[in-house]
Length: 317
Image (cartoon, rainbow, N blue to C red; front, side, top):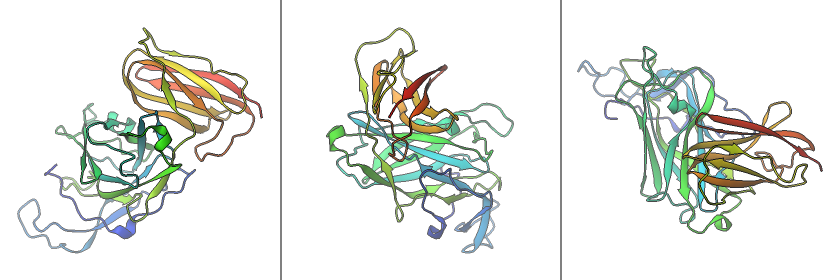
């Protein structure tokens, strides 16, 4: 990462993420104080200490709910990249020391934005993703030695999933946990050969975001299935809770999403890496904000690797 010529982010550019809405991210230019003393050609930087435009804005937020099992909590970090970015360096903090533990038991996994990267010629490439606990926070770094970059199409998507261990189990979790980003460097590509920080807005540590702990969990039933399967929920119809079971013959990132009849996402009970096994989760008929949803037809969809399945269920209040 030493080849990234980062600039210092102006704290005033951070903003509070509003739950229930998509990321608010204008494609305007990001501005940072230029801390480069020497330019790549070896000459002094005439803009040192000045406020300069670094590229089109990139904005980040946290998913509204944590994906949980009895012993883990997974935080989703989402992004809008108005220009392609070549990596990321981020320090993630939370207000639950001792309740959430990363070192030795935690993990990090790529979201769609880091999985679908290519070089400037459109050739599919790979981006390395690493995370380590340092002085009570988790440092996450994504980088490439093959000039990999994100699509930069201005769409919103998952950047990565950060999973913590919960030594005290699900019962030790509060109703919500506050998360904030300290250091954030996002190297953009619009200024190449300069690689400058294009971060515009994110939930920083001076304005942390409360992420809900959902009133549901995922239970490993045991055993190793031979094939993927998404079972019909039970009971169905239901009020107010139902169980959804699925089988995984191999490990992978698993996303289980509930949609309403209009195709709008209601809640994502599971969004994390799981090992092979039989799993069962409970949905209590609430949305991402924890509010009860109305009676009606809902669809639940399981995606993992090359497998996708969807089924219908009926909530009667």
